[in-house]
Length: 126
Image (cartoon, rainbow, N blue to C red; front, side):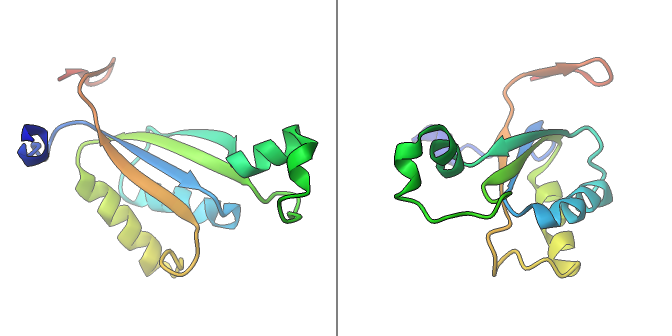
């Protein structure tokens, strides 16, 4: 399959997606984003699917563990980045700050390639 062997250029545009599931670490994540130069991020409040089902359909409540008031709340962070290496540096900075990423389910992170983008300051990228 050709798309598995095609190497992307390091300077192509990417979209960083972070889902923070442990909100106690929200400020640490924001500081780490700033430390790697990410300033054009959008942050959305979200809810895990389990929590959404539990609150919308009382039928499911009996099947799931009782939860703390804010359990299931999440933050979704989207940010354009030039290189996946920025995301790796972000994770390194969080670990250096003592955030137990490998011991607790604090966040999920993905870097997605962008085929086309535009904004006023940088123009068109393809």
